[in-house]
Amino acid sequence: MNSLSKHRPTLLPSLAVLLALLGGCTVVEPWQREVLARPEMSLDAAPLDAGIDDHIYFSKEASSGGRGFGGGGCGCGCN
Image (cartoon, rainbow, N blue to C red; front, side, top):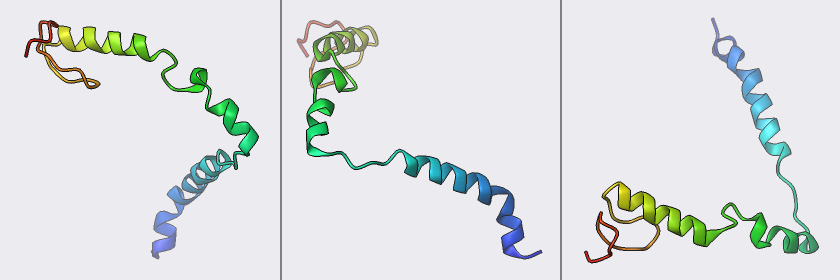
């Protein structure tokens, strides 16, 4: 059995996935960048709400860190 016939069952699905991924690539024109740069187009449209949610999550998990705020598990920020 040669090596090509060994890899043939995965060759067609791999090519299909590759073509699907390349189909999503496009050139963005300068006038389209303005629309894509709007705050509502970001992955996190409400950064203040995300920061508050992260603070609550990390306080409840008794850990520090997250997105740039320090403090201990109690949420008072004294550590």
